[in-house]
Length: 106
Ligand code: FES
Figure 1 (cartoon, rainbow, N blue to C red):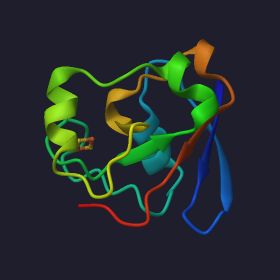
Figure 2: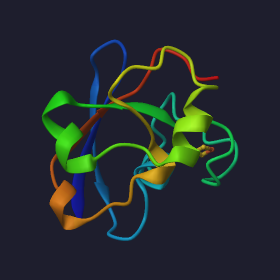
Figure 3: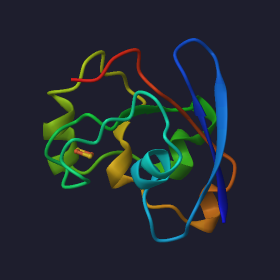
């Protein structure tokens, strides 16, 4: 299990356990994280699973693929640390990951 913390826009922190091989988006949905909508179910086709990767984790998580980058154009308030959480695979190296949930989704 991989510990993943979701920080809401009001600062509330919600700690979850992600399963290796699943995605950060699936972890959010399974734990009822407010603000992660995931309309397309993880097909990289909606941008409603947008998160900001915490500064301490951007290097470990890495950047978006070209397809993900194109879809991020449809997200609100995109920043350098923006990722689509359905495109981040849960793995041991991400144990302790912190992501921030945007104030609103597209
Ligand atoms: Fe639709 Fe991630 S769930 S792009």
